[in-house]
Length: 219
Image 1 (cartoon, rainbow, N blue to C red):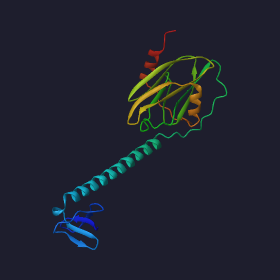
Image 2 (tube, rainbow, N blue to C red; image 1 turned 120 degrees about the horizontal axis):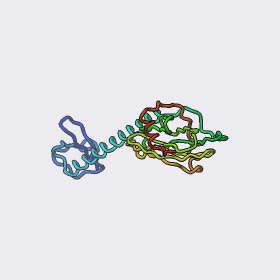
Image 3 (tube, rainbow, N blue to C red; image 1 turned 90 degrees about the horizontal axis):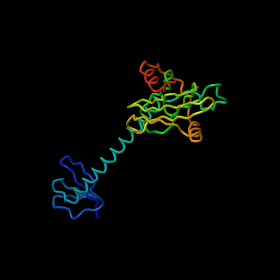
Image 4 (cartoon, helix red, strand yellow; image 1 turned 135 degrees about the vertical axis):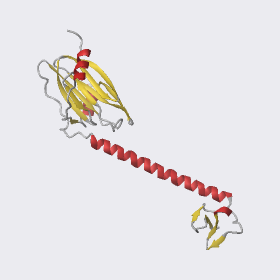
């Protein structure tokens, strides 16, 4: 059975499917192709044509969405790439000090955002994907804060000679809701193998100092 096509007055044709019912009198046959005006096309042929249009539009839309998403992720990754040295463990902790590794793994959640970490009242830096910062801290309570769309914080009671691991990041891909918490050493060390040293720093503000002071218990 010949393939059925139909078109408008401009003579363009479009496929309706692999088979067609008996065409109306206004249809013409060109070899193995039946052509008839759109207004005289059988209802089943018109419906098939509409389905093809819908499938084509859906396919184009999916392709555009995937392309846009890939472009956004690529820009986010390039914008917050860490250029420091690969992770290495410290051989020792200075006397009377504690060592705190603050890091962010390579998860894509919130990849378009770069939160800020503040340690106590004197250290502040952007926490990019797969970045880590080793903080030699004085023994005692240390306020650790992460800020983006909102702020999360906790106070770590650092003990001299001890090493701590704190993972920061963002909870969702499309929003900068921060996440922060201590991580067991084994889990942290496995993730840190893919991290690089953060070398950028940011100025600590008066508000940072005030918040750190307010969170520190009186001696």
